[in-house]
Amino acid sequence: MAKGVVTAYALWAVGGPLGLHHLYLGRDSHALLWLLTLGGFGVGWAREIFRIPEYVGEANREAAGQNRRHHAARPPPVSLARFVGQVCVGIYFGTVALIGLNSLSFFYVMVLPLCVGAGVHLVSCAGHETSNLQKTLTACLITSPIFYGSTLSPLPISLAASVTAAQHRRFKRPHPSGTPPDPLAARLYRLGLAWLAFSAPLGYCVFHNTTATLYYLSDCVAALLDALWFLPWLRDVLEFFLLLPYRILCAVTGGGGAEDSWRKVLEILLREHSQREKEALKVLSVSEDASIEDITRSYRELVKVWHPDHNPNRMLEAQQMFIKIQEAYETLLRRHNIFRKK
Image 1: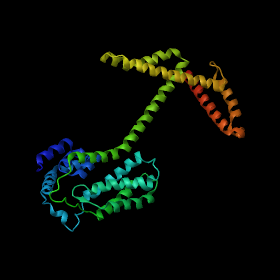
Image 2: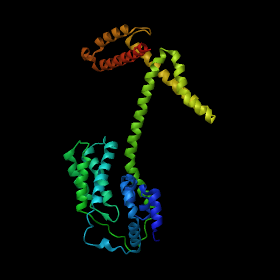
Image 3: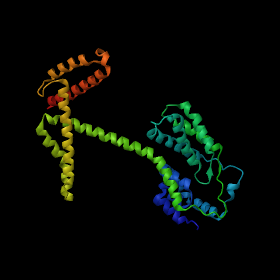
Image 4: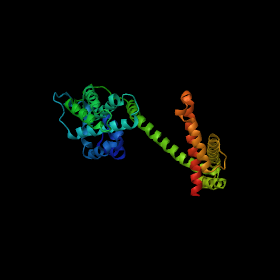
């Protein structure tokens, strides 16, 4: 079935950065490249406004078995745009690897060069051209140890891989005459697997950082709640403001479950941090109304007794107790600092 220029332009306009027009024209490698880079970072997608008719003509000739340039003995001409794309996408893949995979063993020796090489080779396979994957990856593996541990290493690795890919560029072999194209479902399945392989490490990194941010915010709230055990009347005031968004939501939606759930969370937090204060008082052996001078005096005495250098025969126990004393002192000191600000 012949491809239409109007359809290709419509897909380019609607889902061009996701490679829909390339998928329509059977250019799966180009579609994957656009999917992972959002249309070549937008620049490649904009350039294609003048190249859509050429792509459609190539697809129709390929379907009719008339595209004979693949049989040419000469390699395809050097393209500056393709070379720049190889370098940029190689750096992009390397940066994603640095963000999401840098905790893996042999990262700078194996993982990073393979990721950069995959990005460079993906650009090499866009359209009707390709390159030697083995030699491209070999160039990455040789270059990577020279820049071991450097955050800028994707740049020289990508340059070396792009030069190697350009030296071994060639046309793709044409499909045998009469061979039906792969089903759309199979092509989408392969593209989906490639997208998952690329996005999974990055998604994990984003989730991990989001979780760390939420933990940081919860610690800030917990530090504020530390004062509520000694200032009980502030508990209701703070709880009122924390529950205010949920009360508004319940008033709009007519529900009441969110407030009850959030109230239970607050009760757990308050109970947890009140218990922390009590444990700190117990560790330092002081009363609830102890002054800062009493707490400091008890802390200094216990530090002398439980310092690891003074307990060589029970070093592990002394270290654990020493840490508990430090944490207890910091907890009670923070509470007294809040009192002074009040």
